[in-house]
Amino acid sequence: MKKFIIAFFFLSLFSCNSNDIKIEEISFSYENNNAQPSLVLNNDNLSLTWISSDEDMNASLNFRQFKNDGWTNPIKLANGSDWFVNWADFPTHAISGDQVLTSYLKKSASGTYTYDVFLSLHKLSGKKVKEDFILNTDGFKAEHGFVSIAAKNNEGFFISWLDGRNTVEKDMNGNHKPMTIRFAEITNAGDIINETELDSSVCDCCQTSITYSEKGPIVVYRDRSEEEVRDIYVTRNINDGWESPVSVHDDGWVIYGCPVNGPKIVSNSNNLAVSWFTASDGKPTVNLSFSESFGSSFGSPIKINDHNAIGRVDTAFLNEKEVIVSYMEGDDDGTYLRIKKVSIDGKVSEPITVSKIDSGRGTGVPQLEILDNEIFIVWTVFDDENNQLKTVKLNSNDV
Image (cartoon, rainbow, N blue to C red; front, side, top):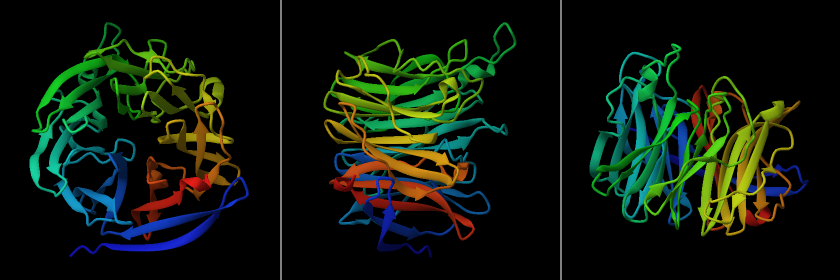
């Protein structure tokens, strides 16, 4: 029988601004390897999904919510032995009304990167609505993944993903055609509707991000031009139509391969914030830009990192005018997971060091959300010969 243990203890971390910050660590023990977390806030529901796997490559997708100062008992939403489990292409989810939609990846052929996106739709109680159905219905043995999901109020979900159906073909020069990004809606019954291609050439394996503003869904992703410029682009659905994608900022980063480092977009009223990693001009940097016009334009980038940026960003609005951004950076002494508060007027707080952290793939992509003035952060650590999730929280008033 699996045993689930929750323990609370307090610790103080010395931050870069020389203040002692009280951080509460919520640690849990769960059998097998646990990694690939997705932390999501929907309408005051803070929820977490992650993959648990054993030595025989049997995997399960687990779900829980944070209620009454603790995590609810985990619910297993899906399991299988033919999954594609990857540190960067992790499952995600969203809550709409009393339903949760989750994504995960299944192998479609023997190739390393031949897999499909599968979805499961459940009630928050765990009751099945529609399980184990495929998102990409193209039928090609290619890469499909890097999913983002946003709730459409209580009327279903918006979903975007990277789709490799065109990569199985070659152009006149013998090169494989580029990856695309696609969008669809998922109804409360689990039907896939309004599917469309958003961009015909994007970076192959950077995470995507989606938000639902008062004007409609907005998607950000790393683009790919014919000249191999791979900057962050945004596209909006306005009046039931998708606008042509435009860059959040013209970094001009030319890179002949995917950096596996995607952006994050969040919204609050008419204000948006996008955080991302770039290494244009050979300078690894984490940037953040605000929009005060539902994403019709973005302000000049605000530099976040103080040392060599690794990226793997996440962002959440603290209020209408401020966000918290998490990021990884390194110096001669090691690699650190840090957060900063950034105001829409350009003011940036001193950094708080959440933890010293491994710079490798095993750490995954740290997750950040804010609930009731508490900042929650989840990432993966290697402990006792297994991967395990580490969760901490701190009061936003201390930032």
